[in-house]
Length: 364
View 1 (cartoon, rainbow, N blue to C red):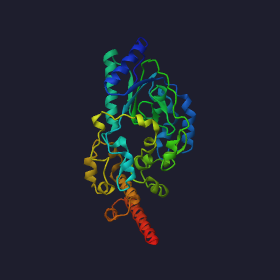
View 2: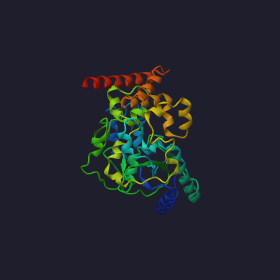
View 3: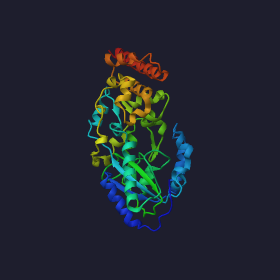
View 4: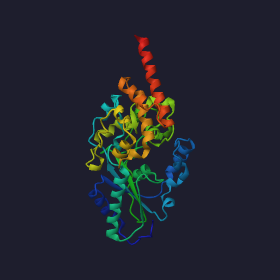
């Protein structure tokens, strides 16, 4: 909660110290943003009016408040932004995607839940500030409230917004998390940096479902990350074949980005791959019991989707996989599952293989 004003502090000196402390805590970079995000309001209104948020009701519920930090947390006059690399030392992502019998899970989710890691690290930074100046008003955010993370990061000079809507930097690409501390401390804001996407449209072309409908404009309803993580019900039939083997999130727009040639591996042990999720077959993951799911994914962001949606996603991946006895047996093992959602997607997957088999026979 915001406590009060601190007009007597040396903001420039404190901002410099905050950046040093942030790096000591493992953040790659710390920036300072002001709270005037009025330039983003029209774009946010248009995006919501177009329905691009899909079932993300919280986006519409908070509306323009996302672009007005002082309305979200009263007394806010500055926002401390933070960047933390997450790219793990994992099996080659493109090779994984190319082998349709294997499961592809977004690189950010292969280790520990980033919410916990980032929130703890930001709290440590806030504690250091308090140790220096005494109690102050602040609130920590890690993708947990109506916050325009990328816009704030852009304003604070952490990077520029790419055409895929993610933040980009010349020195680290886009494989990082963002976090914020809303505060009542009057800190001098950093200047935004110039954009460097130019005429490149690789991310738009690479999107499997055409979710990037225009530069800087994402239709979440078509985004594989939304479909496999946020969507609670049935995945639209016409999009299922386009998902391929991407069973939790999607990184295609990052994998093709030229700036990610400069991405840096994260030294953070919590982001190291767990359970071999960077190199595992769809059949193996589909065989997990609910207890397996709960136990093996404890502390993982993946666990938030629940076992039912886990099986739903795996069924779609298996429906897109090459036909084999193992794949058909795996699907048949869940054909009478208690969940209607799972049964629906398993039935679709089996129908896909039946169609593939018929086509192969016709070509002989």
